[in-house]
Length: 153
Image (cartoon, rainbow, N blue to C red; front, top):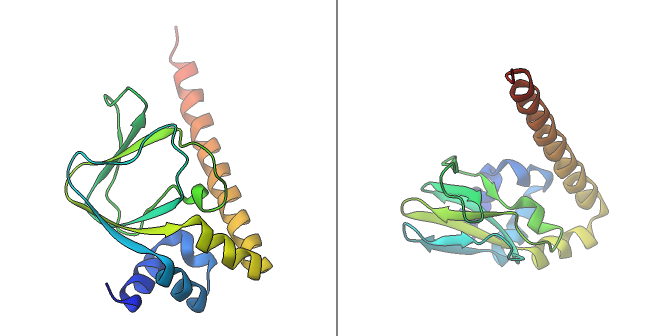
């Protein structure tokens, strides 16, 4: 894979809009393109990943450990799987599995953190982005929780 291809992939990934073009090129240099066969676990629940994956092609499913009955399916090119893993080393709460042939660009946490240490502005933008994403997730959960509570009778 060419460096420019990886930088283009990162440029299309919404999360990496926190980076300028040169920062995306530096991350592209440190990144690795990976191919996953159908059924391959990309991230198992409970594992501490070394970074995040950007979905280049294919479809993945996320689910709680031991419960594949109601997966959340992701097929959007440029989706970042585990963006929080770029900043914190914490176990993943869900498993991410390839549904079909999947290609990702793996971005190591060490490379992202090195850029953040060199550019406090990048660190601030990344923290704000993650905070906004988490706030959105929590709002969505509250909405669903409210509908579930009102349907009890």
